[in-house]
Amino acid sequence: MSDRPRSRTRPADRQRRSDPARTAAYLTLRAVADGAYANLELGEQQRRARLSGRDAAFCTELTHGTLRMRGLYDPILAVAARREVAKIDEPVLDVLRLGVHQLLAMRVPDHAAVSATVAVARQEISQGSGGFVNAVLRRVSERDRAAWVAEVTTGLDEAVDILAREHSHPVWVVRALRAALLTQGESTPAELESELSALLAANNDPGPLTVAARPGLQAEGDLTAAGATPSNAAPTAWTWSRGNPADLAPVRDGRAAVQDAGSQLVAAVLLEAEVEGVDTGQWLDLCAGPGGKTGLLAAAALARGARLSAHEVAPHRAELVRKTLEAARLAGAQVEVTTGDGTTVGREHPDRFDRVLVDAPCTGLGALRRRPEARWRRQPGDLVELAPLQRGLLASALQATRPGGVVVYATCSPHIAETALVVQDAMMRSGSVTQLDARPLVRHRDGSAYEGLGPGPGAQLFTHRHGTDAMFVCLLRRT
Image 1 (cartoon, rainbow, N blue to C red):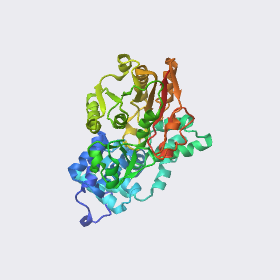
Image 2: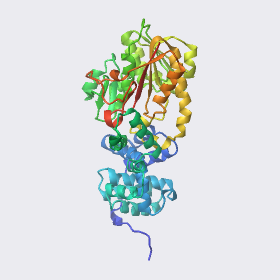
Image 3: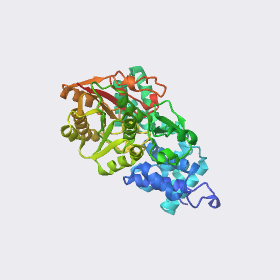
Image 4: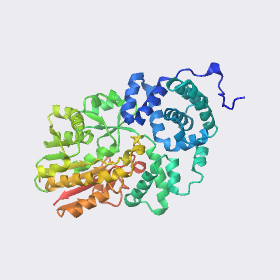
């Protein structure tokens, strides 16, 4: 008699072919494993499968949730499969992860989750893989999420290790976020572990879809007519919850753009900061690609009669900036897009600009909820490579700023090696820079200032506390 586990589903009732939504999710996971970006690949797969409405939303949640939570799902699968996940073929492992997410995190009946996932394995991999997938997922379905978390965290001694597994983050990321809360989050030791847990949980929630209405381009009326609602998160923020934002006319024509409220606030700080002396109306966005913050600055420059220089090192990203600025250009904005090494701009154009933005390349640890695969791609060694670039860009920005002008240094990361330490280094190297308090300029739509931004003078947003990406904003004045 064979020891091979048998399906509990009658042969006549087994799903033979995978549905398009689950197939698109599986194909996206395989492409991500080969280096693709989930947001780009998923859109392409959904277009090929002609998914829309509820099917597209299901596919998105299945894909992104599976990518985020593999740090928890893989230990569960190791127990249920009775083997290390490294010994499971990668395509089969991706199918199993999709099944676990449906069983433990989505409102899919167990029998449907198992049957439909087995169909993906049979259609996309092999008939033989279906039996293995069925047996493993049946074992997973025997316990709920809480019971599985207890199972796979038993034996872990360090609180950081437990939180990393429960919330599916690399341990080094959890340690970095813990340090950020200690230095920038105003957490007391007694509050630290619970707040860290809340931050990690927030990274697993995709959050609202936020749109930036670029000032002066008449996007607000069309957004209201389409059903978008003003958000108090930022002066330019709107919330959209009815489907694909590309269906919004202002997004299609560049008068608005999908953009997290935290990023919108970075641009607002630069625009609200006071400059000393005569404002010549010369602005610079030193790391402009792909153009979200540049779009807000260009619209503001149009209203104020200023001229914006948008600089980007990568030609293909510079082209994205040109496209996103087209609406502002047509409205009369004075904008130029240049390409080259941002660390040399200060030497080439010294003492020129009133306002300079440095949205520095970083690890992106503050945007993990929106980039589901990023937590598994980033490594501690990335900080070593990024640190000299971040310092070089900030030094260049300060040199390009005229005396009395202001520089905003921002990162989509709360890691102290990318935030406070970079600023401290710039202050030590330059004797003609003063750091201003950025916190009063981080304001809601109603004009009230954000609270809980850290001890200052830099402002640190946190996802669990403010509902935005964890942006860091520092305001410097050239003296």
